[in-house]
Image 1: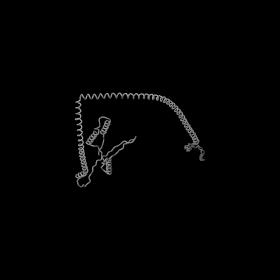
Image 2: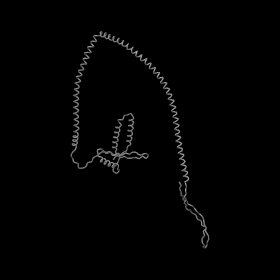
Image 3: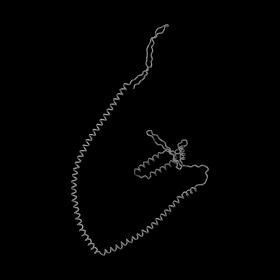
Image 4: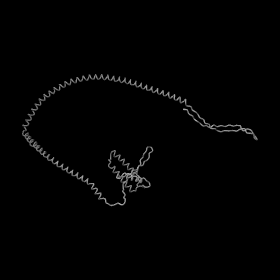
Length: 361
């Protein structure tokens, strides 16, 4: 793009000239010298039209070259991908074809071996089944013969033993019949009667328990219902009908706290926070009014007078704080990670307390 650049320069000049002056007493010519500077304004016009045209032509050629490179790159990438797909397809097909043929041959060989082994196992199984049936028949025949023999021997042995100890067997039968069976029958009758009597007794006890519990519930309900009446009577007994001429002051506990926190990133600054804690028995309007008054009093330098506490106050505060700290950490076990963590907290807390500095109103 063509542009103009103006410049201002100072052009010096000097010289001499002959001056004629008219005749006087002594007329003639006089040689006079002169010098000085003259400002000159020069504007340089720079014509960039040919250069801009050549730049535009070069840009066009570069764009055409870029398009040709992109097209050639895309064609080359497509050709490479196609060649890669064809090569990989050939490799995969050939590999899987070879593996498939090999597996087919191995499967046929294994199938033939398995069928031959299975036929042999079936023949051996048939032979084992026949042997098992034959052995079962032989065992049952031998068992039946020996069972009959041992049964006859048992009966003959029982008869001989019974005849040898016949008085003892008779005594045992009589004792078993009279002492055991008759005792069990009598105890059964006793238990049956006792169960019926116990059921009736339990029913009476349960009824009595229900009656007592119902009476206690009615008594408790009566005491709860008459509780308000008793409380009202007690309050009335404490109060007196004495008129109050002037307004009386109502004292309420108030806690005003001031804290500062470190905020910000690289340029950290301290930020002060003020909080006023009041009783929840007050209404929101009363809490707001008292909070504003306390805040104005505690933060105002003209009305509040902060000073250090006396020695007696410091001793009392130190004793109460240490008692609370010991009570808080006294139940901590002596071993474990929790004990170590609480011990570090306790040590840090006592370090901060020993380095304390505070004022009171």
